[in-house]
Length: 420
Image (tube, rainbow, N blue to C red; front, side):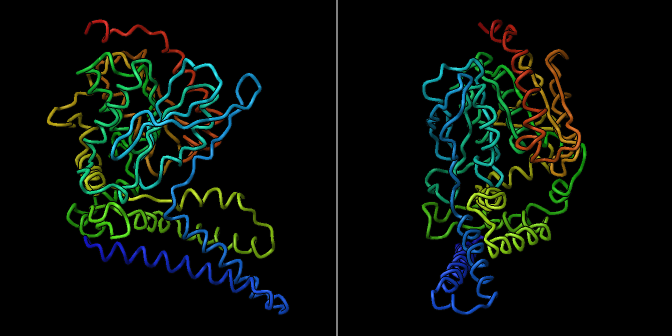
C-alpha cells in the first residue's frame, strides 16, 4: 500500500464521484427536462447535489466561520484569528476579539490530530470566547507539508505543545480534547520538571486515552488485534503528485474516513437518503443540520505516518503513558513531577471511544499532586462528542471547567518559586 499510485487512486475515485454528482445535478437542471413530469429526474438532481457536495468537502479545510461574538457589553465584536506561533506541522492561533478588554482567563485548547481538522472544536471555541482569551493548536494537513520538513511523531507533538505553553506563559489554562490528552499530560510533566516557571496553571483532560486498558473499547481492541507490520502495510501510503507533500508517508484522510463511516454505516446511509429526499421536496437548506454536520465530518486530513504508528504502538499497545514510562527526546518523563498544576478529568458515561476509566487514570499518575488540586467529572448520558461540543458540554461541563479554572487562578506557584 505504500505507493503513490494507491494514494492517487483514492483521490481519483473521490474526484470521479464528485464529477458524477455534478453531472447528474447539471443534467437534471436542463430547462427541456422540466417539461417531463418524471419524479426520477427530480431525484437524480437531488442525488447529484448531495453527492457533489459530500465528495467536494472531503478535500476542503472547513472555515472557522467565527466572525463576530456578542460580549458582556451587549455589543457584537469582530473576531480576528491571529497566528501566534507558526511551525511546519501546526500553528498556535488566537481568537482575538477586537475592541474587547483582554480577559483574565487564558485558555489553550489542544485539538486532536486524529483525522479531522481543529475546526471540529468550533462550537467549543464559540462557547469559550465570551469568557476567555482562546488559543487553539491548528494542526496542518500532512499532504501539504514537504518531505524536507522532516518527520512528526508523538514526541515531536509533545515538544510542539511545550513550545506553545512556553509562548503563552504560566497563567495558561490548558484543555486537551480526546487524543492529545496523554501527550498534553506528558508535556505538562516535562515542563514541570525542566522549566517549572513555564508550566500552565490548570490542565483539563477531556475524554482522553490516558490508560486505554482501563476500560477497553473497539478502538483499543483494534490496536491489540493487529500487529504494527499489518497496520503499516494496510494503512500507510505516500502522498501523490497533486500535493506539496508528494512522497511523504501518511495515513490518508480518505482511508480514515472510510473507517469512520464503516463503524456506523447504516446510520450514515439513512442520513444521506433522508437528505436526498429533503432536497427533492425542496426542504433542504445550505446550512441545515445535515450539511452543518457532514461538512465538518467529511473534511478529513492526512496524518503523518510516524505520528499515527507511534500513537498506536506507544500509547495503545505499550501503554507508555499509563505506565509512566514515556520518553521524549531521550528524556524519561515523570508525570509525578507535576506538583502544583491543578488537574481535572472529564468523561462521558456513554463514551464508546474513550470509555469511563481511561481518562481519570491521569489522577493516579499525578503522585506528586495534592488531592486538593485533583478533580474529576463523569457526565451522565453523554457520548464522546457531547462532552466537548454538545449539550452536555454547554449546559454542564463548560461551567464546571470555568469554575475549576477560577478556583485555581490565585493559587501560589510553589514549583516556580522554589526553582527561582
